[in-house]
Image (cartoon, rainbow, N blue to C red; front, side, top):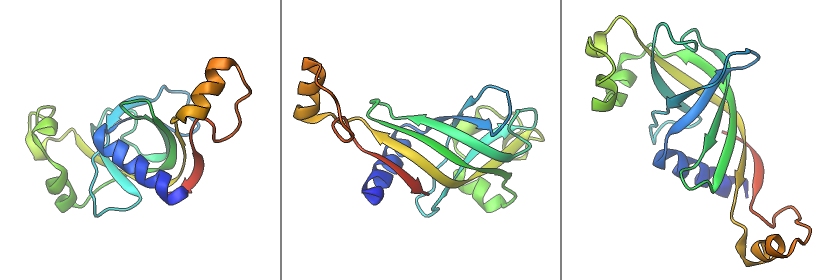
Length: 154
C-alpha cells in the first residue's frame, strides 16, 4: 500500500504543486510555496524564493499539502537547504518564476531552496459505496472505510 499511496501523492503534487511550508519548531505561520518537481529527482523538490523570505535560511521544515480535489492530504517533514547547483536552477527556471525576479536568474534576491524529504503521512479520501452508506446512515466508521492512510519514507 505505501508504494501505491506514494505514487498517488507524487501525481497529485505534480497536478497542483502548492504546499504550505514552515520551519519546524518556529512560531511563524507556514507560507504557500510552489514546489518545483523533477521526475528524475527522488525524495526532493525545490522552491524559488527571496533572500528576505522567512524560509531563506533553511533548516528543518514541515510542509502540508491538499490535493486539488481534496482527495489526498499529506504532511511532509524534511530539511530546507540552499541549492547552489546552477544547473538545477537553469533546469527549473520558467516564465512563472521569471515574473517574480526583475534581475532574472542573476537577481541578487533570488534563492533556490531544496527540500530534502524525510518522511510523510499521507491520507486519501475515497469513501466508496460502503463508506458513503456508513456516513449517510450514521454507522460507525472504521479505518479504511473512507480511504487509505500511510506513513512513508520519501
